[in-house]
Length: 293
Image (cartoon, rainbow, N blue to C red; front, side, top):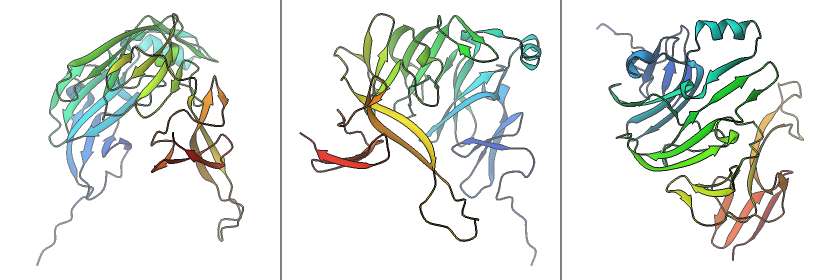
């Protein structure tokens, strides 16, 4: 009886996971089955219908119902790459930062391409359950110490993942937090609950529901801020020299960048709601709870 060797893992050569069973090898995107067998591979340019994009310049991947929605960054021009290597400040056309495409997760067939949009919308922590994309107009300035998008005009859209068609559109204006996002969160964006955000525009603060668009009601005074930290257990774990660490990422109730005692909403991402009792962690990691009115 003969045996057949089956490849059940990604190639041992260069590859990196960019999410949801999708890998990048420096030229192609490769989809794998749950068993680790290669399902298909396609060059970036094929999936994005000729656009010069690469995960090397950013990515965001969503997968739902056998459909990938993927945003990749545009490859900078040779002049921009040379300036970057030399540490020279440069500017880039904000409309040529990202492109987004949808393709069949089983076959790799491209369904649609949006050449100037991204599903990475700065401080909006969205996913494919409520697909949102942003388009930009203006210039992003990259310096040795910081990056500026102060004058970039932003349009936010909801869209159908299968068709790519816009379902709602909001012209937000100059909101840097919809272009860039700091690890500790953006001062322009405050998460309210699972789908709503308070977005500070040059005119006023808007309550944005990523499922339906901007709402005609004022946002609550408080929302949720994110913090990421590394914690050390109080006990010793054998075999690691006493240097055990674990990530301690959490959302905590806040207003105007400062912690508050009682949250105004009870989202699933930040705590647990059982009956009329909600439990959450505060800015210091302590578990707290209270009755929901």
